[in-house]
Length: 473
Image (tube, rainbow, N blue to C red; front, side, top):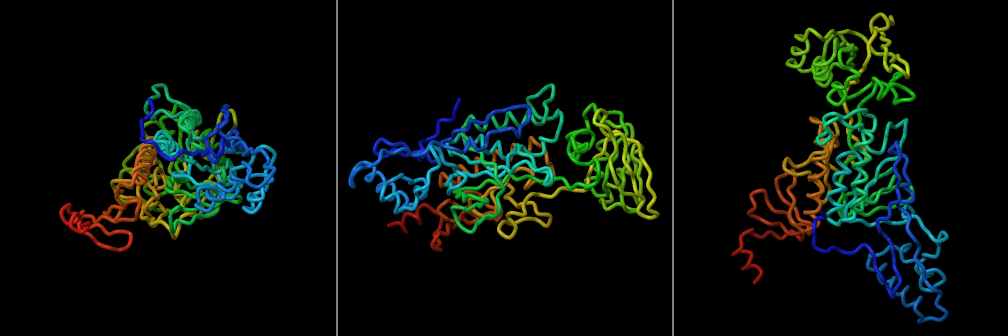
């Protein structure tokens, strides 16, 4: 049952009986076995504004266009949205280019209450919640790119069977799960735009996002761009069919280790830090043998993690070694790894049935560097109680702010949190910040002890009913 929210500003306007569709959800996306087969352009194209030509000044067409010009002046519509063909006032607006009976939203300025960056579990959950709240979210996901290793839908798109996501007693294929996420988001009116964002400006609201051919204005921004596993860049590591990624090569032992394909098999873990030790120890629950390949003669992991791994009889260390290539066949997946000794440069082959790359993750936050507070690695800092960043109106969820759990279910949970935080912010309610203070959409700052309110103009008032009442008088 849909949530009964109070009415919000309608996303369409009718002027003198003519409809202006400048943001109506109209996705005609179709789903196939591959998540990336979609009609993204169709999802973001809308009927052109149709007007009867006005024979004389003062007729309906010109009157409508003058009213449209008022909306442009007030910032309600962009110039292109206000296009009225063959009208003198419209010509003055500079909007005289129409492409047949349709035009593309990607070539104009978009304004949305909520913009979400990222289409993994976090981003799509945020879209579901903000869509149900009638906030008309726009979700931007990166195009599929083999070289950049980006796939709309996040890392679950390169995962086979997911056994630990609640609600699927027999497990579910990662791509199938993400298709269901997206269908549910579309059901509640989420718009999708598949574009590379080139840069952002978060210095003031509305926040501005730039693509190669469009400008997007956002009253609130939810960052769910995730984190990417660091890869070796060796032959055989790429996603199938070019390599064995998803067919014996993984970057998440917790996700894939329990799968039948890896049970009672010989597995290789590449790395020497805490992540590698954690992954290797975890895999010993299922594997017959785990080989840790490390390029040095000692580990970088913490002492406690090292000792735990050294005590495990199923773990064997191969020192001063690098994986030079991953071997296998499309039918059987991984069959071994080619190893190079870093001291004497000799090569040898190690037979195995699975390879887990555990050299760390890199959050996808380069786009926001210098504008949002991050830790030393690049994960976005958020309030311990909310998903708020140091910029009021900007929220972060999923792996982009989580360096510990990195699970689909935890990402979805923080996606829900970010949506509720954004809705609360837009409803003029205070949102907690990492500093402990709270901020409202009007720019008022409430001190961590809740005793003072600093208004947008810098005025400080006491947060006490009798004091506030006296000041108002």
